[in-house]
Image (spheres, rainbow, N blue to C red):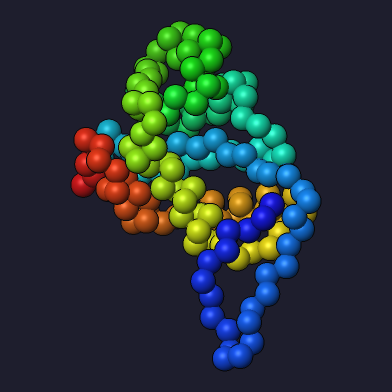
Length: 170
């Protein structure tokens, strides 16, 4: 739960101190999707937090089921080659579910994945320099900052434009 330390300001001669606990390895894992509408005029961020847990195939499957309830029409998943994305139960669900298909990014190509830009933004801007001492606070702040980001469509568009993907928004 060590914060990402960024530059900050302080009155001259007063060095700012950022106190933290360094002996803890608790975390909040996130599964998310940036959804582009068929007409490419709207963009939405969907995410689910998993406090102090690793993302497993069952977590991805549950997220996909929830995502397919929120998005009407066909869904094409573009995602990295994370092991849980390639799990048998996830892939069998995708092949069984009508209107759902997936394509993988090439190996070692995080620059193609716009959700990597989302996490980078949250870690280095919204949540930077926040010393958080307990898991509940970290979860609440991650949820609050993620929900604030959901309402900033122009910023989400910039994450898409930053990738060299063929998806261009209106």
